[in-house]
Length: 132
Picture 1 (cartoon, rainbow, N blue to C red):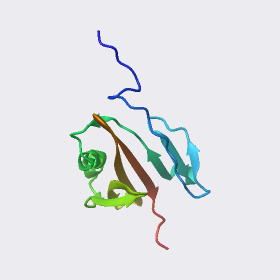
Picture 2: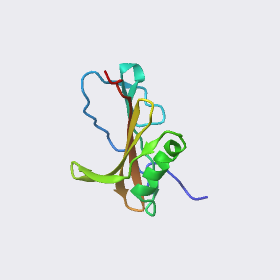
Picture 3: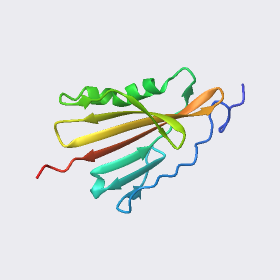
């Protein structure tokens, strides 16, 4: 048998995550995510997750996977993906909205770890306020 361990070259340790949010956000149990924040009783949610994948997986591949379920919604509007830079790190993003008052923003960046990369998918989901 070959020895396997964590952390290792193919299973790096999770990075530290620091998120600055307004005072009315509350950190809640993360479940399968690294961190999770909510406000307004869960009507608005921000999550940060982590995956470990091979070097052949692109950020656009991951973003497509993240929005695949949204495409199935009959009234979903999935905007084209776009790139942005946050604190010197390249991110890919996509906005999704529905006729119902929901808006989702998906973001993903990759942390390079030699033979593998750790994409960090982040997302936010919020209900829009009705027009007055």
